[in-house]
Length: 574
Image (cartoon, rainbow, N blue to C red; front, side, top):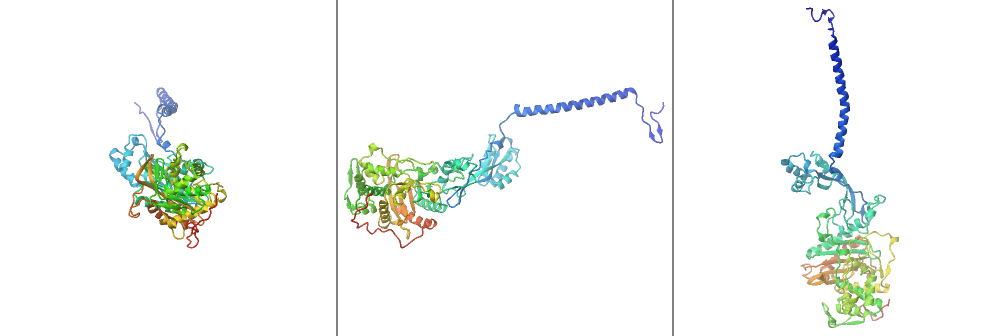
């Protein structure tokens, strides 16, 4: 047979193909082309089916990242001097899908420990509980700093998600918490000014402009420090305090204890959320005697400082016997009634002045409705119905029993007493000089002048001696009332209050401090009265905040009280 190919000098010659072989190659090429065309048709169709399957047939809830709600930005809140009270900053939320963790169950405790080493306010056990939850989605932490979030991301667990959030920060922690308030996880204000000015703070048009409050953080810190110290020393149930500008009604400081940290509101106690300054009503005792005397002056009942009232024995009224805690058992002049805090003498002045006049004064002072201020945490005072406003009610209300108001009511009332007799509603917003409301007249200038002298006399010679701050010419009145709980008087339990103003020759500020149920201590010689519990704190506080608020001590100029004890002339009638 001839060889299948020939060898030449140029190499092997191509083998000639027979007709059957050429047809087979052509058919194979056509087949490959057909399969290729089919693939181009089938793959897009398969992808389309899969997309439909993913989007419709296997539809699932939104992924965790969609559930990490990004709180909207809010305007900052600052004090009257521009100090930050609330601000928004960028933080992260850390969440986990426990059912999708790549980390093996045996290694979850180790992972929890690594996360806890980064988030030092959470324990490994707390984080492990989130990682092993049966829920589809759990938060591990909110308000995480970017640097911490990066370290957690570097751990490499794909089921742990990070989301940037706008978070609210309160740099002073619990300072002025009740006045400022806090926001929830969605960024909405819950209490205080955060809630009261929600629209203003959240409005895109005003977010760039801080909301300026009337508070002064320096005075706020001093008040909180002093009143907390007394509350702890006395093992008291609570406390409240207010510092107010008597000319403008601006609240410069407001404290309610116990309180809470608005950075972590869920960790506070229910008692801590009560704003005792605006929503806690108390019988504030003998601090009310100043209003009774002012009303007696206005009505013409008190015609002279030398006029006397019978306090030689207890005053018997239908169903009620009124006595003095430190009875002098004689007739007393107006200054003596006030500086010795005589219930009997004050009750007699109230009875002579009359119910209608008493009610009209209290209504003019705003004591029949919630205190007129921006925040929503307010409570209506307690007082008897007109039908029950008989002799006993007139007499006891005259010295601060049978009517309950908030400490801020009392602050507004005392501001009215000493500022020339003009009531202006209190405010937590800084008022420009031209924006101070005209207010309404309650007492005459002459009545106000007399009351300033009487209040100063109480601190110089009466129950408020321990409130005297050298050079600041403090005036004020003590108030020690039996605690009333749900209409029942609790023997041995007091509400101790001091109402003060300074400097009395030209008053600038009113201070109210209230201690709820002091127990007595070494500092108060075991006593629970306002003169021993609260008044010494007032003296310390005035010396701390006076220079801050622009009031310098003056050892010379003081209000003249020399004529009060010997005056036989007529008082100017309103």
